[in-house]
Length: 299
Image (cartoon, rainbow, N blue to C red; front, side):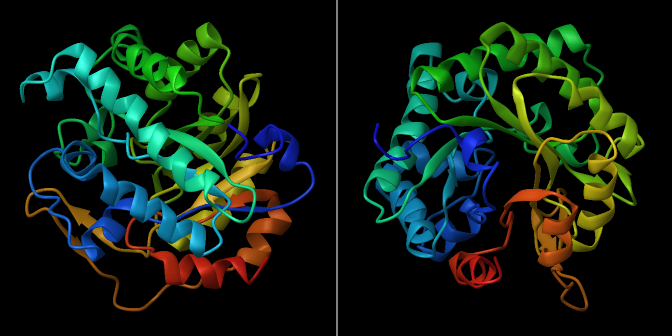
């Protein structure tokens, strides 16, 4: 697919790239129904044209990396809704294909990152913001490997191992990467200067720093105020490029399935992020194309 001229890792050596923003909020803005446990994956099943339209909205905003709609797809969850393994694998591949189509229609270079969300995203109970699921690393490997393999079948440029709440899950994902050889970035979700499960960030980042498959390390889906300290911790553990795509500072309430907005909007000191080593910068939940376009103007 001629959507980008070379590996993402090579591009990161020369410049900062603009990531897209939250897919779910853009789908909602387009009038899509995200109710139920499948979240944005529901739209992938029912209205794939809307997923492509959401990607295209971010392309028009200047995004240079599109993250696929595969975050919340798990074989077990979809089996409970009547999808066999072949159908679920096809949906994972579809998520990559839709992003690739939007990328190919762009007037600038665009890479496709296949989203590999955490185990906690699949039950849709907010446990990705807690971690410590009670599963062993081996069980987490068994959960993630078929998802990763199906995504790789569709040929993304990179995997986005995103919103990871604890190092146990990161270890499992690193095991899967070592088996497949696929390039990926790894981004933890953090709070109060630690991973969501409470692990100190230097320890969490050090776990992944030596992996040859990891092309960037950082954070996503966190308060913007958490970004700079986290990037500083990552820079202390690795010389790899860093990645940052926070949300707007809102807190997700899994019980009511609603976001609680902050009293005041947090600043985004992107110059400081870049000076610390961030080379992939964008937005996560509740950050739409207008914010992404404005963010791109700061690079």
